[in-house]
Image 1 (cartoon, rainbow, N blue to C red):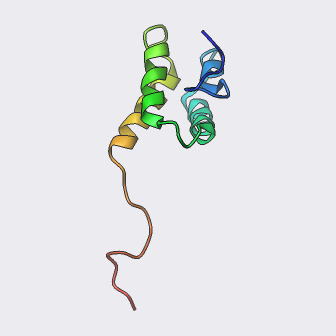
Image 2: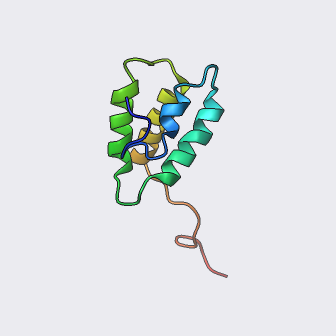
Length: 90
C-alpha cells in the first residue's frame, strides 16, 4: 500500500491508520485536513469510497472508518447555511 496517491495526496489517511490509540476527534481533524488538501478536480465521494474499500476490511473498527462514513452521509444530505433568503427584510 502506497503512502500517498490520488485519493490521499498527502498520505494523511494512511498515517491515521498507523497511529495506535488514535481517537475519533483526532480522526476528524485529520479528515478535515485531508478534505481540504484534495484537489478541486478530484471527486470527494469517489475518493472516500476508494479509501473505505482500501481500509474497511482490514480495520473495520478504526475510528477513521466511522469518520469517513459520516463524511459520505453528510455529502448525501447537504444543508443550506446562512444567507438572507427566506427571511423577512426590515
